[in-house]
Image 1 (cartoon, rainbow, N blue to C red):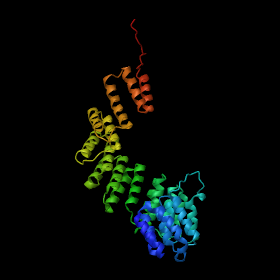
Image 2 (image 1 turned 180 degrees about the vertical axis):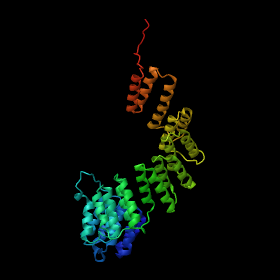
Image 3 (image 1 turned 30 degrees about the vertical axis):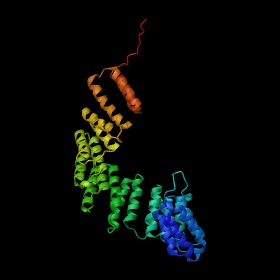
Length: 401
């Protein structure tokens, strides 16, 4: 705050625009100063009107972006001062408007983002590349795909960000096949617009949702041909894609291609969960042990659910207990309800092997599922008792006289 006070004092003495810009930029890099800087700006605004330009207002909108209401207030100050917006104003304003909530039952015309779009058209700035890209993301984020497509089609120029915004809008709204069609169209119509890592991750996840192994192999080859470095996010996305498309061998090859430092908890977790989902329990347990031992990483709760599920499905009761006890001994890794559920599943298998007709075991298991909130499993145990002809013996008590 001391720097804000010093710059404000200098602004009072000099009314220098450079000092004003420095004060406003301070609020961008140090958000805690924003209320003070905004008040100082509003107080000095009338004396600075003769020097009015968009930059101070744009900077204030940018500094207020975390709170869309504050950003709109800054834009209102700009309009009240009769300062025309420039090419930088609307991308900042639209990004802030995207933070306003919107649902399918709302009238789009009442949303501030739509009003900002109308103003951009009025000022002849809606066709600007950066404004249009922000508009595509805005409408895509609100599932207004017709509006997003209209903006995209009307763009006189498109770059990689434009295509990425369109592909992301389609994929995030469940149109995975159309998103892949847009990706192919990008290569045909804009060969100079090379996809970036964000675009590729979106494409990878679209293929994963479709569960198409041929497409998964094609995307993997495309990534290699383009020379992408398999960083943590992209590598993990590829592993998940191959796993969901039914090929853990390809997932393992991607994991091996990743640099050691990029194999974080998420990449290891994707391998563990993938092996567990494909019934390769020993490999899931082996990956978990290498993650904790060789890589020295601390597993998250998803990795632990994965390895416990693998132990349950593979009948690895002792190994499952080993993992579970290690959680109990490690601060910050206390078992959650889901982990207890995995352990109940392992108890379940052993009961079926040891005493399949013992009613007490079934009752205890049913109660255990109830304690952890897995009511469907509780009902299934009760149904299994009826199917297997296991009747619950009535309780009795004795009284000694």
